[in-house]
Length: 283
Image 1 (cartoon, helix red, strand yellow):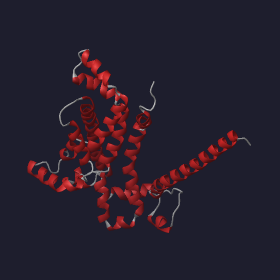
Image 2 (image 1 turned 30 degrees about the horizontal axis):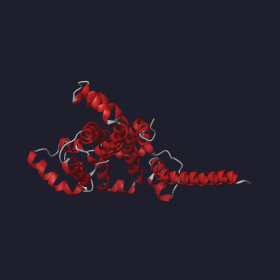
Image 3 (image 1 turned 60 degrees about the vertical axis):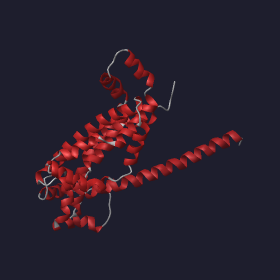
Image 4 (image 1 turned 135 degrees about the vertical axis):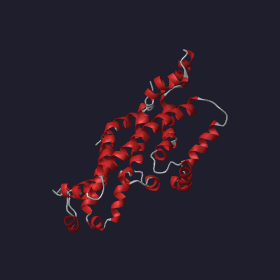
């Protein structure tokens, strides 16, 4: 066996080991999700008896028991209103802010950008008490506005899109548009938004998951039962003694709450690859 053949053999072996490890890790990540879906179709007694990946036929009973305690569809509607509106605002204003930081020059730009990145390290829960007091004085409690308006200032989304712009959109393109007489608003809507679509869509996936799963803020700021979001309603199941013992109902509730996230991810997931690979090949 020559050295070339031995080298190819080592490469194939290393790749085979890598694929086996990746497959094993994928299975480990998927199994809890499959268990959740399967347990949503099982009775409480069957769940207590042990583990299985074979679905049962108790989902309709679990869902009916769930509807006896919470209004699933109204909670899903409320969550959709907040999550979709917040995601749209995050996508638009994060792209606009990223455009400003990437293609504008102004005093204190680096200092301001560093401060914003530093603010990403601060947990949002630390400012929840002050935010509650602010909305109390403004008369905005039990309203969706305090949950939606802050999405216009999403630092993580701005950072992600700015990094994408730096690797994909040349400054000469913006200069050419300005020389041709295009206004900044026109440049942003006709050039920046279309070219930033992969990064914006990728960021929107994470933003939607964050807003859909938000539990603390709606719990603190929303009081009317008809306005409560789905995560808050699911969390209230802990107070029902009958539901506490019926894990099938809890699994059914969690499975239903995950469904919109899966749909949203499927719609926009194709942009993730194009966003990650952007700028890797230059010609």
